[in-house]
Image 1 (tube, rainbow, N blue to C red):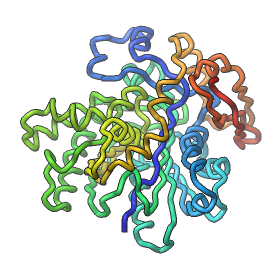
Image 2 (image 1 turned 120 degrees about the horizontal axis):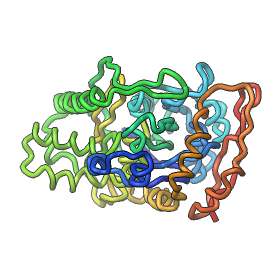
Image 3 (image 1 turned 45 degrees about the horizontal axis):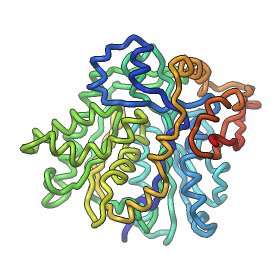
Image 4 (image 1 turned 30 degrees about the vertical axis):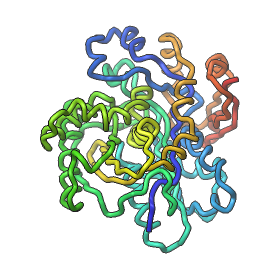
Amino acid sequence: MNVGIETLNVYCGVASVAVPVLFEGRGLDAARLGNLMMTTKSVALPFEDPVTHAVNAAKPILDAMDEADRDRIELLVTSSESGLDLSKSIASYVHRHLGLSRRCRMLEVKQACYAATGALQLACGYLAAGLSPGAKALVIATDVSLVNENASYTEPAMGTGAAAVLLGDDPRVLDVDLGAFGTHSYETFDSARPGPTFDVADADRSLFAYLDCLTNAYAHYAEKVADVDFATTFAGLAMHTPFAGIVRAAHRKLAREHRLPDADADFARRVAPGLEYPRLVGNLCSGSVYLALASLIDHLRPDDPVRVGMYSYGSGCAAEFYSGLVDDRSTAEVGRMRIGEHLAGRCELTFDEYKRILADNADCLVPVADKRIDPGRYAEVLDRVAGARTLLACTGVRAYHRGYEWIGAGA
């Protein structure tokens, strides 16, 4: 049976800061902008958290479904490095504010930036088994960035937001090649979040692990899939994008290994379309590869069915290369989410505004018994968002229980 992504949406916040502005404000070396290949980065407002990101990504998908189809969502999985509690899952809040059926399984998973792909593959296996014909699964990757000036060149690369993926037996976005995957995993300490207020990272170790896992995950894929040819099998490649520059380096490595005659032309044709949105957002952690997929489809705009390759990497580390088919239905389905339009409509912050918001965001994930958050404090930013939108906002905490309300943004 056909199983895969029926609908895909990505929410990347309503505010951004230009990366050159951030470089200048932090006194970073502008000569390194070219390696980063970033234009802007999304910035969370202080009433946004992993729950609001997840709901704001998934709600347009559910709004377009009839009640019967929504009730067929039998599995909800949230993946996140930005957990809010050591027991209570993000999924429980998301389930409530999306109004999903009480007969829906829900859980939260974690494996750095790989987790959403792991959840997607497990969900596809469940759906393909046919144990519940017509069932659907909703996987949402959601994270909030906590990096500040202490993160040096990592700060401009980190984005914020969520990617929501609806899976089922009518894969209008990506018809997953079931069983066609390659994996590679081992323990390494290249990146971690030991506490709710800071990250630790070994940038060199992470870079080499990303590249090593790509080579080995693709080799495993090629062992399992007959007659695969890196140069001709895939019309496009969507890859986990910590920053666009690392994807360029990864493609160059694969091009050498598979003896492509013109790596630059191949990169421009098959990889660059999937980097258009990530270059405007920054690293979405486990949602990053699905932002790249949305970008690839929106810019490749396939008519006839073509195969695309997907590479997902998560620190720690786990990786997977898999594939699927996209076509004109993919173009229409992703296009109706207007992801590019929403990115263009974000409020662009000054460096001083960015610093103030970053300071207010610092304790976003810290468990506290009571806290009040007033979204009205950020009305000046919300008023500068292009296009009217309704968003879920966190309005505070009472006895450790987070509260949420719907607010308006834009005009």
